[in-house]
Image 1 (cartoon, rainbow, N blue to C red):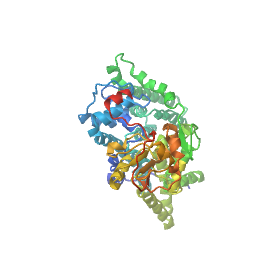
Image 2: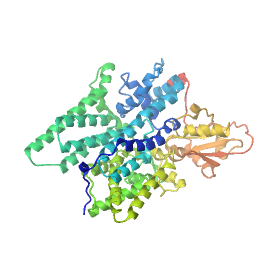
Image 3: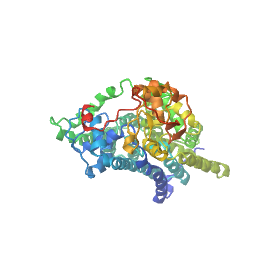
Image 4: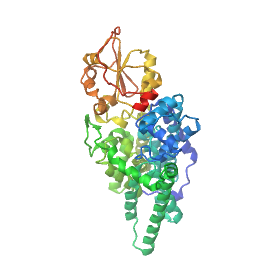
Length: 553
């Protein structure tokens, strides 16, 4: 017998239940808004978003402006300095100068306020899940909300000013709106879907995967009547027109402030010309190897190793139950994750965050398996206890790893094996630099050698440090503390000229004195500091905070 639900016969769950899980979600995200250091392109996106409101829509055009504009909106009310009197030929240099020189005193507030916008999108995603599940059975609702509130990938990227979580929100919202339109189609609903689609693609270009998703869903909802076909065509025309109007509105500031007043849609299309340049010969880290090669099993492996075991068990059980005909998954829930996974099978191995939009759909699918387990409890309490135990296990697994949600791996991966499997935004994204600086202060370190491939200077947080020298390659020098992070070990050889020499030296063979946060290792060498006149090597990026040097950089 196939288990079916009848939402119309149930009373909707009160909003109070969402507020409980929202509080749990918030307790795991809000403190990190100020604790985590800037990651990836976060600084660049925030400053580009700041200048977007002044009409700059072409900085880093491959990253559409909607998310970064929204995330930077609070900073427009902070009275920040934006005119330097310098002429920058590169946007990333301009952005670094904006944060670390012009507005250094406001650096923390700029970052935290931008992340707060992403956190709101994370709550919004939970509200969308709650809105869909609230008329279902209590067991389905509880499973869905539990999996959302304790999903490490969603928790991690709800705390960064990046486009991945806003994209996930809009992607899910568009599909929900589409599903609603199949029940009662109207021009108004088509326009709403089109506007949401426009919002999604102006957050991140991968939202265009919604087009094949809709085509597949239309195929499954197909009908042969002439009136129905005309209705589909009208919906696509109205929706497409609404999406184009939104895209043009988002890029409109460029037509007002750029001298030649280009066509807004043309500015959007220019982003596609930049993509081959951005991804030209990138380096990827996977299973202990750094190479230019992509792997078809990268994203399935990342999903398997970084998703909580409870989530994986319920999702796997769902597949079995669907195969056995015990439950059904709606097509609109199963198609989007399949399309996303298929699109990224041979794409760039840059981190699980790129397929973040699959999570809300997979949560709904896993929720149905949890509901089935509770249904079986009518004849046996064992299954109900197992269901409750699985949810509790996920809460403990994820909660005990707080606040290091970026580097979360499930229990199949021993802590010392994480660095072998996955890198970049799956493990070390530069999020622990501030924690490093605090540890240096707590340990009273005044002689530090840094081996770091990252984007944030620890000096921003008050930590002084020095580059390695040729003498350091021969062995650890007395009186010094040596620091190295996972990012340097994994990706350093591709981006830091000195990394190969450093990684072939003593530091990869020696046992660390200890570990800081989730990604840093330190080696304390006893003794008195000796004078070292050997040449310095670039064991970390060249961080520049002098105005003239910025202009020459």
